Length: 550
Ligand SMILES: [Zn+2]
Image (tube, rainbow, N blue to C red; front, side, top):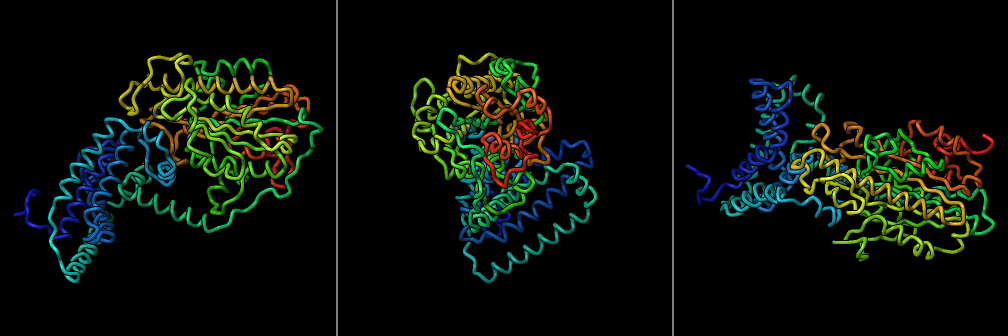
Protein backbone atom coordinates (compact mmCIF):
# COMPACT_ATOMS: atom_id res chain seq x y z
CA UNK A 1 0.00 0.00 0.00
CA UNK A 2 1.23 3.47 -0.80
CA UNK A 3 1.42 5.69 2.22
CA UNK A 4 2.20 9.40 2.06
CA UNK A 5 5.65 8.66 3.40
CA UNK A 6 6.52 5.70 1.24
CA UNK A 7 9.90 5.65 -0.41
CA UNK A 8 8.79 3.60 -3.38
CA UNK A 9 9.16 5.89 -6.37
CA UNK A 10 5.90 7.44 -7.59
CA UNK A 11 4.60 7.03 -11.08
CA UNK A 12 4.87 10.62 -12.41
CA UNK A 13 1.20 10.75 -13.37
CA UNK A 14 0.12 9.58 -9.91
CA UNK A 15 2.21 12.28 -8.27
CA UNK A 16 0.69 14.77 -10.69
CA UNK A 17 -2.77 13.72 -9.48
CA UNK A 18 -1.68 14.22 -5.84
CA UNK A 19 -0.78 17.77 -6.83
CA UNK A 20 -4.17 18.20 -8.52
CA UNK A 21 -5.98 17.12 -5.35
CA UNK A 22 -3.89 19.46 -3.19
CA UNK A 23 -4.45 22.45 -5.50
CA UNK A 24 -8.17 21.74 -5.67
CA UNK A 25 -8.71 21.45 -1.93
CA UNK A 26 -6.12 23.36 0.10
CA UNK A 27 -5.34 25.62 -2.84
CA UNK A 28 -8.92 26.82 -3.10
CA UNK A 29 -9.97 27.31 0.52
CA UNK A 30 -11.25 30.89 -0.05
CA UNK A 31 -13.63 29.67 -2.74
CA UNK A 32 -14.90 26.76 -0.64
CA UNK A 33 -15.42 29.03 2.39
CA UNK A 34 -17.32 31.50 0.23
CA UNK A 35 -19.60 28.87 -1.33
CA UNK A 36 -20.24 27.30 2.09
CA UNK A 37 -21.37 30.64 3.49
CA UNK A 38 -23.69 31.62 0.64
CA UNK A 39 -27.35 32.00 1.68
CA UNK A 40 -28.64 29.66 -1.05
CA UNK A 41 -26.37 26.79 -0.02
CA UNK A 42 -27.81 25.36 3.19
CA UNK A 43 -27.29 21.96 4.82
CA UNK A 44 -27.59 19.12 2.33
CA UNK A 45 -27.67 21.56 -0.58
CA UNK A 46 -24.37 23.02 0.52
CA UNK A 47 -22.79 19.57 0.57
CA UNK A 48 -23.99 18.63 -2.92
CA UNK A 49 -23.16 22.01 -4.47
CA UNK A 50 -19.78 22.09 -2.83
CA UNK A 51 -19.15 18.45 -3.71
CA UNK A 52 -19.89 18.89 -7.39
CA UNK A 53 -17.94 22.15 -7.56
CA UNK A 54 -14.91 20.47 -6.00
CA UNK A 55 -15.09 17.57 -8.44
CA UNK A 56 -15.54 19.88 -11.42
CA UNK A 57 -12.56 21.96 -10.34
CA UNK A 58 -10.53 18.78 -9.74
CA UNK A 59 -11.27 17.67 -13.31
CA UNK A 60 -10.32 21.08 -14.66
CA UNK A 61 -7.09 21.25 -12.68
CA UNK A 62 -6.13 17.68 -13.70
CA UNK A 63 -6.87 18.65 -17.24
CA UNK A 64 -4.61 21.71 -16.98
CA UNK A 65 -1.79 19.80 -15.26
CA UNK A 66 -1.91 16.86 -17.67
CA UNK A 67 -1.77 19.35 -20.48
CA UNK A 68 1.16 21.49 -19.31
CA UNK A 69 3.25 19.42 -16.90
CA UNK A 70 5.61 16.77 -18.22
CA UNK A 71 7.79 14.70 -15.78
CA UNK A 72 10.87 16.78 -16.46
CA UNK A 73 9.06 19.86 -15.18
CA UNK A 74 7.00 18.08 -12.54
CA UNK A 75 8.85 19.26 -9.42
CA UNK A 76 9.47 22.93 -10.27
CA UNK A 77 6.02 23.28 -11.86
CA UNK A 78 4.44 21.89 -8.68
CA UNK A 79 6.22 24.52 -6.55
CA UNK A 80 5.19 27.31 -8.93
CA UNK A 81 1.55 26.21 -8.79
CA UNK A 82 1.68 26.00 -4.97
CA UNK A 83 3.13 29.50 -4.79
CA UNK A 84 0.54 30.90 -7.20
CA UNK A 85 -2.50 29.41 -5.45
CA UNK A 86 -1.19 30.23 -1.97
CA UNK A 87 -0.50 33.89 -2.67
CA UNK A 88 -3.75 34.29 -4.57
CA UNK A 89 -5.65 32.62 -1.68
CA UNK A 90 -3.86 34.78 0.87
CA UNK A 91 -4.89 38.03 -0.85
CA UNK A 92 -8.44 36.81 -1.41
CA UNK A 93 -8.84 35.82 2.24
CA UNK A 94 -7.08 38.84 3.70
CA UNK A 95 -8.51 41.63 1.56
CA UNK A 96 -11.45 39.96 -0.14
CA UNK A 97 -10.06 40.96 -3.53
CA UNK A 98 -10.45 38.74 -6.57
CA UNK A 99 -7.79 37.89 -9.14
CA UNK A 100 -8.41 39.38 -12.60
CA UNK A 101 -6.19 40.86 -15.34
CA UNK A 102 -6.08 44.34 -13.76
CA UNK A 103 -5.12 42.84 -10.39
CA UNK A 104 -2.25 40.94 -12.02
CA UNK A 105 -1.25 44.13 -13.83
CA UNK A 106 -1.00 45.78 -10.40
CA UNK A 107 1.15 42.94 -9.14
CA UNK A 108 3.47 43.20 -12.15
CA UNK A 109 3.88 46.96 -11.65
CA UNK A 110 4.26 46.85 -7.89
CA UNK A 111 7.55 48.13 -6.54
CA UNK A 112 9.59 47.05 -3.52
CA UNK A 113 7.99 49.66 -1.23
CA UNK A 114 4.53 48.36 -1.94
CA UNK A 115 5.58 44.76 -1.40
CA UNK A 116 7.08 45.67 1.95
CA UNK A 117 3.78 47.26 3.00
CA UNK A 118 1.94 44.05 2.21
CA UNK A 119 4.29 41.74 4.10
CA UNK A 120 3.04 40.51 7.45
CA UNK A 121 3.55 37.56 9.78
CA UNK A 122 0.26 36.26 8.57
CA UNK A 123 1.54 36.19 5.01
CA UNK A 124 4.73 34.40 6.05
CA UNK A 125 2.54 31.86 7.89
CA UNK A 126 0.46 31.33 4.76
CA UNK A 127 3.57 30.81 2.64
CA UNK A 128 4.95 28.36 5.17
CA UNK A 129 1.76 26.27 5.19
CA UNK A 130 0.98 26.58 1.50
CA UNK A 131 4.40 26.49 -0.15
CA UNK A 132 7.32 25.66 2.12
CA UNK A 133 6.02 22.59 4.00
CA UNK A 134 4.14 20.92 1.13
CA UNK A 135 6.99 22.02 -1.16
CA UNK A 136 9.60 20.18 0.91
CA UNK A 137 7.50 17.04 0.89
CA UNK A 138 6.90 17.41 -2.84
CA UNK A 139 10.55 17.96 -3.69
CA UNK A 140 11.71 14.88 -1.76
CA UNK A 141 9.38 12.39 -3.46
CA UNK A 142 11.22 9.92 -5.69
CA UNK A 143 9.74 9.59 -9.18
CA UNK A 144 9.90 6.52 -11.40
CA UNK A 145 11.41 6.88 -14.87
CA UNK A 146 8.75 5.90 -17.37
CA UNK A 147 9.08 5.46 -21.11
CA UNK A 148 7.52 8.06 -23.33
CA UNK A 149 4.86 5.93 -25.02
CA UNK A 150 3.16 4.35 -21.98
CA UNK A 151 3.36 7.68 -20.17
CA UNK A 152 1.78 9.57 -23.04
CA UNK A 153 -1.00 6.98 -23.28
CA UNK A 154 -1.70 7.14 -19.55
CA UNK A 155 -1.76 10.96 -19.50
CA UNK A 156 -4.02 10.99 -22.53
CA UNK A 157 -6.38 8.47 -20.91
CA UNK A 158 -6.61 10.53 -17.74
CA UNK A 159 -7.04 13.67 -19.81
CA UNK A 160 -10.11 12.18 -21.46
CA UNK A 161 -11.37 10.84 -18.13
CA UNK A 162 -11.07 14.29 -16.52
CA UNK A 163 -12.95 15.80 -19.40
CA UNK A 164 -15.77 13.23 -19.10
CA UNK A 165 -15.94 13.73 -15.32
CA UNK A 166 -16.20 17.48 -15.72
CA UNK A 167 -18.93 17.10 -18.33
CA UNK A 168 -20.94 14.70 -16.14
CA UNK A 169 -20.84 16.87 -13.03
CA UNK A 170 -21.61 20.07 -14.87
CA UNK A 171 -24.57 18.31 -16.47
CA UNK A 172 -25.81 16.92 -13.13
CA UNK A 173 -25.71 20.21 -11.28
CA UNK A 174 -26.11 22.68 -14.11
CA UNK A 175 -29.16 24.51 -12.70
CA UNK A 176 -27.58 25.14 -9.31
CA UNK A 177 -24.20 26.11 -10.69
CA UNK A 178 -25.55 28.40 -13.39
CA UNK A 179 -27.58 30.42 -10.90
CA UNK A 180 -24.71 30.43 -8.43
CA UNK A 181 -22.31 31.86 -11.01
CA UNK A 182 -24.90 34.37 -12.19
CA UNK A 183 -25.72 35.64 -8.70
CA UNK A 184 -22.18 35.63 -7.39
CA UNK A 185 -20.01 36.85 -10.23
CA UNK A 186 -16.95 37.12 -7.98
CA UNK A 187 -16.83 33.29 -7.75
CA UNK A 188 -15.63 33.20 -11.36
CA UNK A 189 -12.52 35.09 -10.33
CA UNK A 190 -11.86 32.87 -7.32
CA UNK A 191 -11.01 29.54 -8.92
CA UNK A 192 -7.28 28.95 -8.40
CA UNK A 193 -5.10 28.72 -10.44
CA UNK A 194 -7.36 29.52 -13.41
CA UNK A 195 -7.95 33.09 -12.27
CA UNK A 196 -4.20 33.76 -12.32
CA UNK A 197 -3.54 31.78 -15.50
CA UNK A 198 -6.39 33.53 -17.31
CA UNK A 199 -5.27 36.95 -16.08
CA UNK A 200 -1.65 36.43 -17.06
CA UNK A 201 -2.53 35.10 -20.53
CA UNK A 202 -5.07 37.85 -21.13
CA UNK A 203 -2.65 40.51 -19.98
CA UNK A 204 0.28 39.26 -22.04
CA UNK A 205 -1.83 38.86 -25.16
CA UNK A 206 -3.12 42.42 -24.65
CA UNK A 207 0.35 43.82 -24.07
CA UNK A 208 1.82 41.89 -26.97
CA UNK A 209 -0.83 43.18 -29.36
CA UNK A 210 -0.29 46.73 -28.03
CA UNK A 211 3.46 46.44 -28.36
CA UNK A 212 3.09 45.26 -31.94
CA UNK A 213 1.28 48.47 -32.87
CA UNK A 214 3.02 51.82 -33.35
CA UNK A 215 2.17 54.63 -30.95
CA UNK A 216 -0.29 56.97 -32.66
CA UNK A 217 0.51 60.66 -32.27
CA UNK A 218 -2.32 62.78 -30.92
CA UNK A 219 -3.22 66.42 -31.38
CA UNK A 220 -0.81 67.23 -34.19
CA UNK A 221 -2.89 70.36 -34.76
CA UNK A 222 -2.56 71.46 -31.11
CA UNK A 223 -1.80 75.13 -30.55
CA UNK A 224 -2.28 77.74 -27.87
CA UNK A 225 -5.38 79.93 -28.18
CA UNK A 226 -3.33 82.91 -27.08
CA UNK A 227 0.43 83.19 -26.74
CA UNK A 228 1.32 85.16 -23.59
CA UNK A 229 3.18 88.42 -24.10
CA UNK A 230 5.59 87.71 -21.23
CA UNK A 231 6.38 85.00 -18.68
CA UNK A 232 4.36 87.02 -16.13
CA UNK A 233 1.25 86.24 -18.14
CA UNK A 234 2.19 82.64 -18.86
CA UNK A 235 -0.09 80.35 -16.88
CA UNK A 236 1.20 77.79 -14.39
CA UNK A 237 -1.20 74.90 -13.97
CA UNK A 238 -0.77 72.07 -11.49
CA UNK A 239 -2.64 68.81 -11.73
CA UNK A 240 -2.44 66.76 -8.55
CA UNK A 241 -3.23 63.09 -9.16
CA UNK A 242 -4.50 61.83 -5.83
CA UNK A 243 -3.96 58.22 -4.78
CA UNK A 244 -6.62 55.92 -3.34
CA UNK A 245 -8.71 58.78 -1.90
CA UNK A 246 -12.40 58.03 -1.92
CA UNK A 247 -15.06 60.71 -1.94
CA UNK A 248 -16.86 59.09 0.99
CA UNK A 249 -14.08 60.13 3.41
CA UNK A 250 -13.34 63.53 1.87
CA UNK A 251 -14.43 66.39 4.13
CA UNK A 252 -15.58 68.59 1.22
CA UNK A 253 -18.04 65.92 0.12
CA UNK A 254 -19.92 66.16 3.40
CA UNK A 255 -18.17 63.37 5.33
CA UNK A 256 -19.10 63.45 9.02
CA UNK A 257 -15.45 64.01 9.96
CA UNK A 258 -13.70 67.17 8.80
CA UNK A 259 -10.85 65.57 6.88
CA UNK A 260 -10.27 68.59 4.58
CA UNK A 261 -10.16 71.61 6.92
CA UNK A 262 -7.61 73.59 4.89
CA UNK A 263 -9.34 73.06 1.55
CA UNK A 264 -12.59 74.04 3.24
CA UNK A 265 -11.06 77.41 4.12
CA UNK A 266 -9.91 77.87 0.52
CA UNK A 267 -13.39 77.05 -0.69
CA UNK A 268 -14.82 79.67 1.66
CA UNK A 269 -12.58 82.23 -0.07
CA UNK A 270 -14.54 81.52 -3.24
CA UNK A 271 -11.81 80.36 -5.63
CA UNK A 272 -12.27 76.61 -5.24
CA UNK A 273 -14.93 74.32 -6.69
CA UNK A 274 -15.45 70.81 -5.34
CA UNK A 275 -17.04 68.34 -7.75
CA UNK A 276 -19.20 66.05 -5.70
CA UNK A 277 -20.18 63.34 -8.18
CA UNK A 278 -17.09 62.08 -9.99
CA UNK A 279 -16.51 58.48 -11.12
CA UNK A 280 -13.12 56.97 -11.72
CA UNK A 281 -12.19 55.18 -14.93
CA UNK A 282 -10.80 52.10 -13.18
CA UNK A 283 -10.39 50.75 -9.68
CA UNK A 284 -6.60 50.67 -9.67
CA UNK A 285 -3.74 53.02 -10.55
CA UNK A 286 -2.74 50.72 -13.36
CA UNK A 287 -6.10 50.99 -15.12
CA UNK A 288 -7.14 54.52 -14.13
CA UNK A 289 -3.99 56.46 -14.88
CA UNK A 290 -3.58 55.71 -18.62
CA UNK A 291 -7.33 56.10 -19.07
CA UNK A 292 -7.44 59.52 -17.31
CA UNK A 293 -4.78 60.93 -19.62
CA UNK A 294 -6.29 59.46 -22.78
CA UNK A 295 -8.62 61.27 -25.18
CA UNK A 296 -10.68 58.09 -25.52
CA UNK A 297 -12.72 58.03 -22.33
CA UNK A 298 -13.48 54.90 -20.32
CA UNK A 299 -15.60 52.91 -22.78
CA UNK A 300 -13.40 53.44 -25.84
CA UNK A 301 -10.21 53.13 -23.80
CA UNK A 302 -11.19 49.70 -22.52
CA UNK A 303 -11.99 48.46 -26.01
CA UNK A 304 -8.86 49.81 -27.65
CA UNK A 305 -5.68 47.80 -28.16
CA UNK A 306 -4.11 50.72 -30.01
CA UNK A 307 -1.51 52.73 -28.07
CA UNK A 308 -2.09 56.49 -28.33
CA UNK A 309 -0.22 59.50 -27.08
CA UNK A 310 -1.98 61.23 -24.22
CA UNK A 311 -2.83 64.56 -22.65
CA UNK A 312 0.76 65.47 -21.77
CA UNK A 313 1.96 64.90 -25.33
CA UNK A 314 -0.76 67.20 -26.65
CA UNK A 315 0.06 69.93 -24.11
CA UNK A 316 3.73 69.69 -24.99
CA UNK A 317 3.00 69.78 -28.71
CA UNK A 318 1.01 72.99 -28.22
CA UNK A 319 4.24 74.55 -26.96
CA UNK A 320 3.81 74.32 -23.19
CA UNK A 321 6.48 73.17 -20.75
CA UNK A 322 5.31 69.91 -19.16
CA UNK A 323 6.69 68.25 -16.04
CA UNK A 324 5.71 65.07 -14.19
CA UNK A 325 6.75 64.71 -10.55
CA UNK A 326 6.28 61.25 -9.10
CA UNK A 327 6.02 60.18 -5.49
CA UNK A 328 4.28 56.92 -6.47
CA UNK A 329 5.28 53.82 -8.37
CA UNK A 330 5.63 55.63 -11.72
CA UNK A 331 3.34 57.19 -14.31
CA UNK A 332 2.29 53.99 -16.14
CA UNK A 333 3.50 55.37 -19.46
CA UNK A 334 1.58 58.65 -19.50
CA UNK A 335 4.69 60.81 -18.91
CA UNK A 336 7.08 58.90 -21.17
CA UNK A 337 7.81 61.79 -23.52
CA UNK A 338 7.85 64.74 -21.09
CA UNK A 339 10.27 65.90 -18.38
CA UNK A 340 9.92 63.84 -15.25
CA UNK A 341 11.39 63.71 -11.83
CA UNK A 342 10.99 60.98 -9.23
CA UNK A 343 11.32 61.42 -5.48
CA UNK A 344 12.41 57.88 -4.69
CA UNK A 345 16.13 58.52 -4.62
CA UNK A 346 15.81 61.50 -2.30
CA UNK A 347 16.98 61.37 1.27
CA UNK A 348 15.55 64.47 2.88
CA UNK A 349 15.51 63.49 6.55
CA UNK A 350 12.46 65.48 7.62
CA UNK A 351 10.28 64.17 4.77
CA UNK A 352 11.75 60.83 3.74
CA UNK A 353 12.55 57.59 5.51
CA UNK A 354 13.05 53.97 4.50
CA UNK A 355 13.07 54.87 0.83
CA UNK A 356 9.74 56.67 0.79
CA UNK A 357 8.84 60.32 1.15
CA UNK A 358 5.79 62.27 2.24
CA UNK A 359 4.09 64.09 -0.62
CA UNK A 360 5.33 67.54 0.49
CA UNK A 361 8.72 66.54 -0.94
CA UNK A 362 7.21 67.25 -4.39
CA UNK A 363 6.26 70.78 -3.42
CA UNK A 364 9.66 71.37 -1.88
CA UNK A 365 11.36 70.32 -5.12
CA UNK A 366 8.91 72.02 -7.46
CA UNK A 367 10.66 75.43 -7.87
CA UNK A 368 14.00 73.78 -8.59
CA UNK A 369 12.48 71.40 -11.16
CA UNK A 370 10.48 74.18 -12.85
CA UNK A 371 13.66 76.19 -13.31
CA UNK A 372 15.18 73.25 -15.24
CA UNK A 373 12.46 73.30 -17.92
CA UNK A 374 13.01 74.80 -21.37
CA UNK A 375 12.71 78.61 -20.97
CA UNK A 376 11.21 79.05 -24.44
CA UNK A 377 8.35 76.75 -23.54
CA UNK A 378 8.07 78.16 -20.01
CA UNK A 379 7.44 81.57 -21.52
CA UNK A 380 4.26 80.17 -23.06
CA UNK A 381 3.03 78.39 -19.95
CA UNK A 382 3.70 75.35 -17.78
CA UNK A 383 1.69 72.31 -16.76
CA UNK A 384 2.94 70.20 -13.84
CA UNK A 385 1.50 66.89 -12.70
CA UNK A 386 2.21 65.76 -9.16
CA UNK A 387 1.50 62.08 -8.56
CA UNK A 388 0.88 61.50 -4.90
CA UNK A 389 1.61 58.65 -2.55
CA UNK A 390 -1.71 59.77 -1.06
CA UNK A 391 -3.65 57.14 0.87
CA UNK A 392 -1.97 54.10 -0.66
CA UNK A 393 -2.80 51.07 1.50
CA UNK A 394 -2.80 48.88 3.37
CA UNK A 395 -0.29 50.75 5.59
CA UNK A 396 -2.45 53.90 5.86
CA UNK A 397 -0.73 54.86 9.10
CA UNK A 398 2.48 55.45 7.13
CA UNK A 399 0.79 58.03 4.91
CA UNK A 400 0.62 60.93 7.36
CA UNK A 401 3.32 62.56 9.51
CA UNK A 402 2.81 62.61 13.30
CA UNK A 403 1.97 66.33 13.36
CA UNK A 404 -1.03 65.79 11.04
CA UNK A 405 -2.64 62.84 12.82
CA UNK A 406 -5.92 63.76 14.54
CA UNK A 407 -7.69 60.41 14.58
CA UNK A 408 -6.28 57.83 16.99
CA UNK A 409 -5.55 55.00 17.53
CA UNK A 410 -4.55 53.89 14.05
CA UNK A 411 -4.34 50.35 12.72
CA UNK A 412 -0.61 49.52 12.59
CA UNK A 413 -0.89 46.21 10.74
CA UNK A 414 -0.96 45.41 7.05
CA UNK A 415 -3.34 42.51 7.68
CA UNK A 416 -6.28 44.89 7.92
CA UNK A 417 -8.72 42.25 9.08
CA UNK A 418 -6.79 42.01 12.35
CA UNK A 419 -7.65 45.63 13.19
CA UNK A 420 -10.90 47.05 14.55
CA UNK A 421 -12.77 48.87 11.77
CA UNK A 422 -12.47 52.29 13.44
CA UNK A 423 -8.69 52.00 13.64
CA UNK A 424 -8.47 51.33 9.92
CA UNK A 425 -10.66 54.35 9.22
CA UNK A 426 -8.58 56.48 11.62
CA UNK A 427 -5.38 55.70 9.74
CA UNK A 428 -7.09 56.31 6.40
CA UNK A 429 -8.69 59.59 7.50
CA UNK A 430 -5.32 60.86 8.73
CA UNK A 431 -3.94 60.19 5.25
CA UNK A 432 -6.80 62.26 3.79
CA UNK A 433 -5.96 65.05 6.26
CA UNK A 434 -2.44 64.97 4.89
CA UNK A 435 -3.67 65.10 1.29
CA UNK A 436 -5.75 68.13 2.32
CA UNK A 437 -2.64 69.74 3.76
CA UNK A 438 -0.48 68.92 0.74
CA UNK A 439 -2.98 70.21 -1.82
CA UNK A 440 -3.66 73.36 0.24
CA UNK A 441 0.05 74.05 0.63
CA UNK A 442 0.39 73.74 -3.14
CA UNK A 443 -2.46 76.20 -3.65
CA UNK A 444 -0.80 78.64 -1.23
CA UNK A 445 2.45 78.36 -3.14
CA UNK A 446 0.59 79.02 -6.39
CA UNK A 447 -1.18 82.02 -4.81
CA UNK A 448 2.21 83.52 -4.09
CA UNK A 449 3.32 83.36 -7.75
CA UNK A 450 2.84 86.62 -9.60
CA UNK A 451 1.15 85.04 -12.63
CA UNK A 452 -2.09 83.23 -13.54
CA UNK A 453 -2.12 79.89 -11.70
CA UNK A 454 -4.57 77.04 -11.25
CA UNK A 455 -4.75 73.64 -9.63
CA UNK A 456 -6.84 70.59 -10.34
CA UNK A 457 -6.97 67.64 -8.00
CA UNK A 458 -8.53 64.27 -8.72
CA UNK A 459 -8.01 60.87 -7.14
CA UNK A 460 -7.25 57.88 -9.34
CA UNK A 461 -9.72 55.51 -7.65
CA UNK A 462 -11.31 54.94 -4.26
CA UNK A 463 -10.84 52.29 -1.59
CA UNK A 464 -12.80 49.76 0.43
CA UNK A 465 -12.20 49.95 4.16
CA UNK A 466 -13.98 46.77 5.18
CA UNK A 467 -17.49 47.54 3.89
CA UNK A 468 -19.12 44.25 2.84
CA UNK A 469 -15.93 42.54 3.97
CA UNK A 470 -13.92 44.22 1.19
CA UNK A 471 -10.54 45.86 1.61
CA UNK A 472 -8.23 47.88 -0.68
CA UNK A 473 -9.26 48.33 -4.33
CA UNK A 474 -8.98 46.73 -7.75
CA UNK A 475 -12.36 44.97 -7.90
CA UNK A 476 -13.47 44.38 -11.52
CA UNK A 477 -15.29 47.67 -12.30
CA UNK A 478 -18.76 46.34 -12.88
CA UNK A 479 -18.83 44.60 -9.50
CA UNK A 480 -16.85 47.24 -7.62
CA UNK A 481 -18.63 49.02 -4.78
CA UNK A 482 -19.11 52.79 -5.06
CA UNK A 483 -16.42 53.32 -2.41
CA UNK A 484 -13.85 52.21 -5.00
CA UNK A 485 -15.13 54.32 -7.92
CA UNK A 486 -16.51 57.57 -6.38
CA UNK A 487 -13.55 59.94 -6.19
CA UNK A 488 -12.99 63.52 -5.05
CA UNK A 489 -12.13 66.17 -7.64
CA UNK A 490 -11.62 69.92 -7.28
CA UNK A 491 -10.43 72.95 -9.20
CA UNK A 492 -8.86 76.09 -7.79
CA UNK A 493 -8.25 79.19 -9.91
CA UNK A 494 -6.14 82.16 -8.84
CA UNK A 495 -7.65 85.64 -9.24
CA UNK A 496 -5.22 86.48 -12.10
CA UNK A 497 -6.27 83.24 -13.83
CA UNK A 498 -9.97 84.04 -13.43
CA UNK A 499 -9.32 87.50 -14.85
CA UNK A 500 -7.21 86.22 -17.77
CA UNK A 501 -9.78 83.60 -18.77
CA UNK A 502 -12.84 85.68 -18.04
CA UNK A 503 -14.34 82.78 -16.10
CA UNK A 504 -16.73 83.52 -13.25
CA UNK A 505 -16.47 81.26 -10.20
CA UNK A 506 -20.25 81.46 -9.74
CA UNK A 507 -20.66 79.77 -13.11
CA UNK A 508 -18.12 77.07 -12.20
CA UNK A 509 -19.89 76.47 -8.90
CA UNK A 510 -22.93 75.66 -11.03
CA UNK A 511 -20.93 72.76 -12.51
CA UNK A 512 -20.08 71.34 -9.08
CA UNK A 513 -22.78 68.73 -8.59
CA UNK A 514 -23.15 67.44 -12.15
CA UNK A 515 -22.08 63.84 -12.75
CA UNK A 516 -18.50 64.01 -14.06
CA UNK A 517 -15.88 61.34 -14.47
CA UNK A 518 -12.25 60.79 -15.44
CA UNK A 519 -13.51 61.07 -19.04
CA UNK A 520 -13.73 64.84 -18.45
CA UNK A 521 -10.13 65.29 -17.35
CA UNK A 522 -8.46 65.26 -20.78
CA UNK A 523 -10.83 67.85 -22.24
CA UNK A 524 -10.96 70.03 -19.13
CA UNK A 525 -7.18 70.15 -18.80
CA UNK A 526 -6.90 71.23 -22.45
CA UNK A 527 -9.59 73.84 -21.80
CA UNK A 528 -7.82 75.06 -18.68
CA UNK A 529 -4.51 75.24 -20.57
CA UNK A 530 -6.18 77.05 -23.50
CA UNK A 531 -5.00 74.49 -26.02
CA UNK A 532 -7.00 74.28 -29.22
CA UNK A 533 -7.09 70.97 -31.11
CA UNK A 534 -9.64 68.97 -33.02
CA UNK A 535 -9.49 66.41 -30.21
CA UNK A 536 -11.29 68.64 -27.70
CA UNK A 537 -14.93 67.88 -27.13
CA UNK A 538 -16.29 71.07 -25.53
CA UNK A 539 -19.22 69.18 -24.04
CA UNK A 540 -16.73 67.17 -21.96
CA UNK A 541 -14.77 70.25 -20.84
CA UNK A 542 -16.01 71.27 -17.39
CA UNK A 543 -14.79 74.84 -17.88
CA UNK A 544 -16.17 75.36 -21.39
CA UNK A 545 -19.67 76.23 -20.19
CA UNK A 546 -18.21 79.17 -18.25
CA UNK A 547 -16.12 80.66 -21.03
CA UNK A 548 -17.07 84.25 -21.86
CA UNK A 549 -19.49 84.55 -24.74
CA UNK A 550 -21.23 81.27 -24.01
ZN1 LIG B 1 -4.01 54.16 -7.28
